[in-house]
Length: 177
Image (cartoon, rainbow, N blue to C red; front, side, top):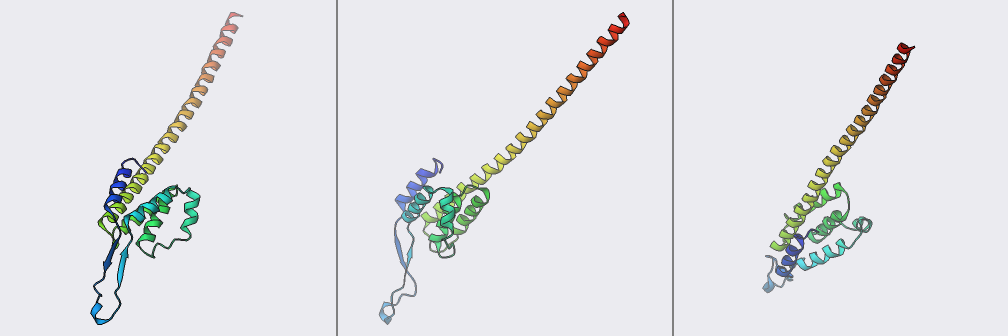
């Protein structure tokens, strides 16, 4: 990850923590069971990010087979991280879209939303870089082709000049005879 993302993630890690939120359906007096929704902590997300960052592209691709992004926000986050680890454009676009969708998930803390926004922006920058690189590569290729064409034309002109010089020499020799 870029240098700017590291301190931001560290700050998010310091701010985050496990949170347990009771639902509105709680009625302890009526004898029903207490229903609690646990939110995946930011520390867990950071641990997942470290784990995925250590993976090779092949390992991330293999791990993708076992992930269901629809299972929950933690799985969606993990899916986005794995896609981000792959080294091709389409995967980065999917990762960006995944982190964008993750920001809309209910039950996330502010820190988790901010982390998803940072990762979305990171992947967007990678996409922009790749597009710019591709444009520059095309320009380079076309300039290389133009250079090769110019060198070929130069060689052809040199051959014509040499032929004219030889012809002048032959004409000059015949006039002298």
